[in-house]
Length: 270
Image 1 (spheres, rainbow, N blue to C red):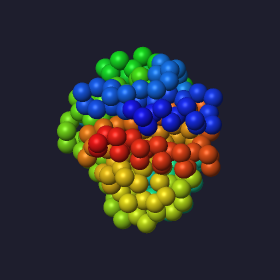
Image 2 (cartoon, one colour):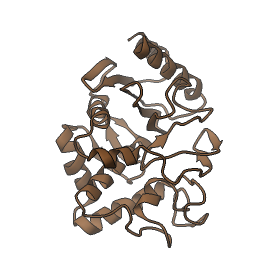
Image 3 (cartoon, rainbow, N blue to C red):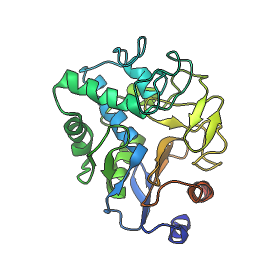
Image 4 (cartoon, one colour):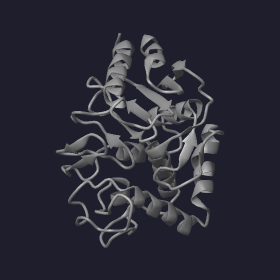
């Protein structure tokens, strides 16, 4: 794909990328086996493991976790009211979309409590091993501490496009807006009214500005990371895109990411 060739002009030391269809990888760029820090793209993997624990009935989306009135569902959807990096309660449950990395640490601890398996091991066994993601590991906090490669995340994206590890119903729920109408901030992109989120996945909707392309469908879901990484799935296109870099997110990324994603969408539609 021509769009991927533009990555050679990005101001980063290393970049790898892939575009994926349900049938497999469409195109790739760079060293797809190179392992990068994922930062908050970690949350997509952690959410998948939490949902599998729900599917296995080890836990439930309605289990109370976090502040009074908060559940697993609230934590996955950043609707618990918890602060970004602590147990400070900044708002009543389900009144604001407050992006909480700490909430994902509580989710990991909850899975560990009810499965008696260290969460990093649970993630490896429930998500990575079945998908053949042998370069992926959680080595730090559940909100931002995973490492992976484009090759591995292409397998994960393929799973999101054609779910096998989750039932169709639970997958659809995870990529549907949870607690509609909540306002909140997307880190680095300001406040959105509303700030739509599913269960672990940000949902593009009609946000502007945004890290996906302006031509990505409103149903597009995924996540970006402060390490200069992103993964999106556009169900209307029937495609996903992964880009991993080793330069921290900043002003350099905003125009390049959006332009790149629009170029990818244009080629997929042509």
